[in-house]
Structures are given as C-alpha cells and as structure tokens.
Image (cartoon, rainbow, N blue to C red; front, side, top):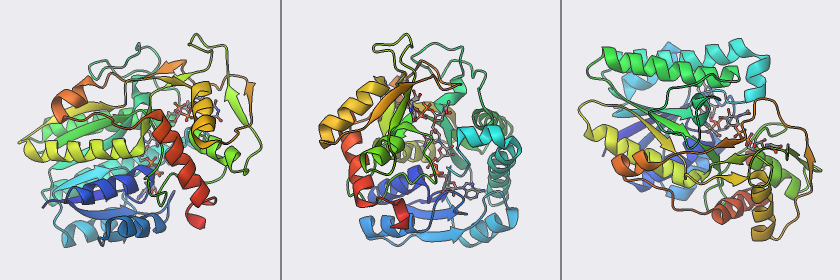
Length: 340
Ligand code: NAD
Ligand code: UD1
C-alpha cells in the first residue's frame, strides 16, 4: 500500500485524515513542529487505529528537516496541511504568515522534486473565492481579493502549486478548498484544540457550553440572510478527512493532474441555526448575545460540491446534528483539549 506524508499532520484536520487514511489501508508519516498542536493527537490516532505512525518533529519550511524524512522514507504522496491559520493574527503579523506558509510550500516542492515524489494535495480554503464571486462557489470561478494575509497566503500558494505543476510534467497537484470544518471523531479522542480565545464559531460555542467562557457574541444579525446572521457551509471533519482519502486515490491513479475541488456540503446554515441545533441535540444552554458585525465577514459562503462527487465519488454523509454532537462529545471529554 502507498505511504502518505502528512505535513502538519498533528493538527485538527491532519489527525482526522490520518485516522481515515489508516482505516483505508494507507501507511502514514507525520511531520509537524507543533506550532499549533502536540504529539498527543498522534498518540490518540494510534489508539483509535491500533497502528503505529512514524512521527517526526520537523519544520516543514526547513530543508534540512525535510531531507531527513525524504532520505529515510519512501513517500508516494504528500498532503500539505502545515501552516498558520489564525486570521486575526495574520493581520497583526503578516510577515510571519507569509514566511511560514509560503516557505513550507516551497521547501516541500523542492524536496519532493529532489526525491522524485510527484503527488501533492494542498489544504486550501473557500476564502480564496474572495468577496466578488456569487454563492454557491464553483471551482471554475476566478480567485478573488482576500480580506487578510492568511487568505492571501492560500491564494498565493495555489498559484505556486499550479505554476509548479505546469512546469513539471511529472508533478500532480490537487487543491482542496475546505469550507467550514467542525465536529470531531466520534470517539471524542481527537478534535479541535485552539490555543487561547477561539476565533472560530464552534470552538467558541463548545467553550461557552462547558463553562470556560461566559457568552457567545453572534457577529451581526442584520445580514441579508434567512435570519439576519451569516450563513456558512459547515462540514464534519470526518467527512472532510474522507475527502482526502478519495483525493489520494485519485491523484495516485492519474499520470498527471492539476485539479481543484471544493470540499463542502453545499448546504448553508446560519449562526443562529448552529447555536439552536447545538442546544437541542446536546441538551445544553449556550448563552449568547447579538453584537456588531466582524470586519471581513461575508454574509454567505457555501460550495457547489458537484465536482468532488463527479470526479472523486465523494460526498458528505454526516448531518449538522452529528457535527454538533461530536463537537460537544470532544469538548466534554477534553475540557482543556490535549492538555488534559
Ligand atoms: P491546525 O493548526 O490544527 O494544523 C496545522 C498544523 O500545521 C499544526 O499541527 C501546526 O503545528 C503545523 N505547522 C504549522 N507550521 C508548520 C511548520 N512550519 N512546520 C511544521 N508544521 C507546521 O489547523 P487545521 O485546522 O488542521 O488546518 C490544516 C490546514 O488546513 C491549514 O493549512 C489550514 O490553513 C487549512 N484550512 C483550515 C481550515 C479550518 O477551518 N480549520 C479551513 C480552510 C483551510
Ligand atoms: C474564518 C476565516 C476564514 C478561514 C476560516 C477557517 C474570517 C473573516 N474568515 O471563516 O478565512 O478560512 O475561518 O479557519 O475570519 N461567529 C460569531 N461569533 C464568534 C465566532 C464566529 O458570530 O464568536 C460567526 C462569524 O461571523 C461567521 C460564522 O460564525 O459568520 C463562522 O465564523 P468562523 O468559524 O470564524 O469561520 P469563517 O468566518 O467562515
């Protein structure tokens, strides 16, 4: 069976993808510098799957660190999750974001070329559609203007990978544009473990529900949407992880490809619907108030997910109820994340 290197694989999406790849029979190697994670997530993946994972503490932007892995391991494909992802922090520290995120991509591509590894799948984001495109987003739409440096790094890295694929006839690239991943593995053993105050909605909701934070502020209720709050395409992280397994099967079956796929459900839910569903499914209260809009937020964001179904044979299976239940299950079992 093929061996897949997960760069940034100790993080939220990487750890769930490791489980699904192992379940599908792949061998997995993880490289991470724990900038936003810990090796504990990989210990837990090993417990869930009963398989040992080759785990390297390594900076993916550092050529010497990558050499150590590529010279030792036989790698068939790379999934590139490694990157910094806090939107607000990227506005404060743009150079850190450009340096880290773009260097990881360049170093990976250079090392792959040296060791004749020709398949890379990249974690991109719906944020690259920008503000001008109309929902639902289609892969054929042009990338737009991003509202923050984090988003620009994704857009630039898509361009770098596309240019590299055009120049190198052996290199295959798949760009996966994630919508809003939430939820956790059904065991509750792995999940999202944000440091400090969460930026994203679901970790904030679960921390209010568990009593770590007082009250959720819903950013704006005067948007032109069904109930005035923003709508997003929330996707269960296990469905997202399974999308990577399909993408690996696809890239390994092609002589050459350069493809983009949206990974979303195609169904938007509002912030209020998320809070209400979370309360109903879990029988808990989520204190919330309505506040001002957050700058940079779009009223609506959701995918047209037809291409992933047609080409990869992938579609989401889990419901919003599953997402809310599994997010809560993880939070309850791990009130302080991987720190116990
Ligand atoms: P995460 O922070 O949990 O995982 C990213 C991992 O990369 C972390 O384990 C971090 O320690 C590691 N990392 C960062 N810089 C590194 C470096 N130089 N060398 C080695 N490891 C490094 O985030 P996630 O939610 O799992 O996201 C994975 C990828 O998907 C990221 O690239 C992110 O930008 C992208 N993405 C995430 C979302 C989302 O909502 N979670 C949405 C769209 C795209
Ligand atoms: C955000 C980023 C996006 C990134 C994605 C995944 C912004 C502007 N966008 O997307 O670039 O790819 O995360 O990391 O930051 N909300 C509240 N109260 C909260 C938190 C969120 O009402 O405390 C609302 C937001 O206004 C939004 C929805 O919940 O309508 C989802 O927010 P969030 O989880 O931060 O994701 P996005 O904003 O979609």
